[in-house]
Length: 159
Image (cartoon, rainbow, N blue to C red; front, side):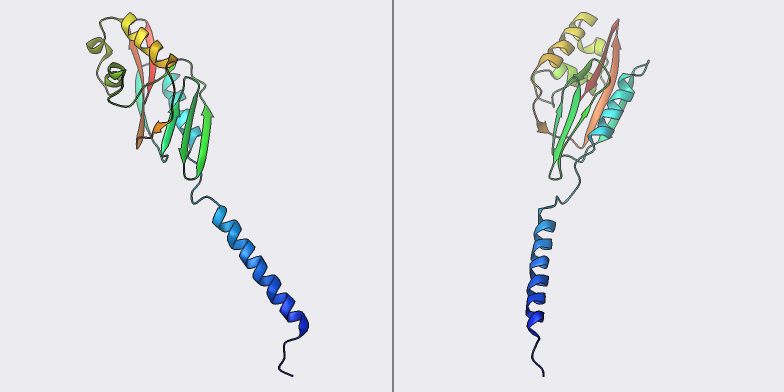
């Protein structure tokens, strides 16, 4: 009279297996969504497409960043996100302490005529930075974008 029916044992085993499978699927899901590379690309394009010199910052929620002349990629525990830049002539700038420290100074707000002897030297430094290796690096808390005009040279620095 108080015995469990034979079917109940299979029902409990089925419920237990479904619970284990559900817990396994939930454990494999990322803890956070991938970073917002599209928002970063939109900020870069907005500054680069402007007619006048401008500066903007975009907060990052990523651990690693890779900026090329045509893409921005972000990586975190939630995954990797990549967005295409529509703006032409985007120049990635290395973090402080790297070889192209002059471009970093301009990105940080120093006028280009105080850093470079003439517009040609500025253009050459920007070309070297665009042609260099674009590696994954530690992401800053905020990405700075600055469009700079020096003579006839117009460059959008990103770093």
